[in-house]
Length: 69
Image 1: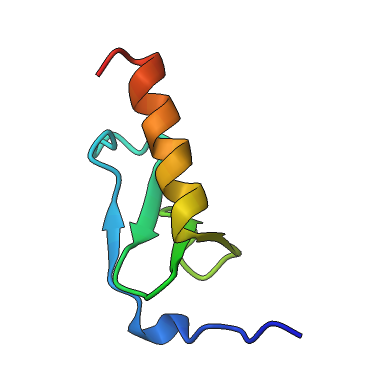
Image 2: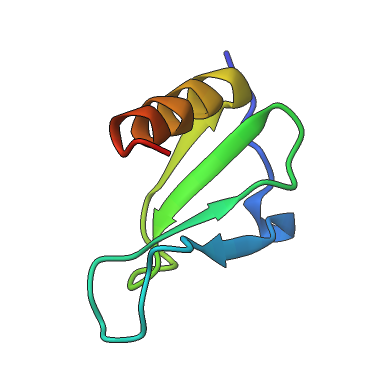
């Protein structure tokens, strides 16, 4: 059974594409070894999605490629 990471030590940051207009925002914590937790910034006590580092990196790289970055 996988262990549940202690997210109390997560250093959350908002997406650089988020704005302060109350729109859809995500936060990620990239200070935990091997994983990247993701949550809704409007609901910080709500559910958290946890991705392995390599899966998150692949996801971000595909978004950048699609955006032509």
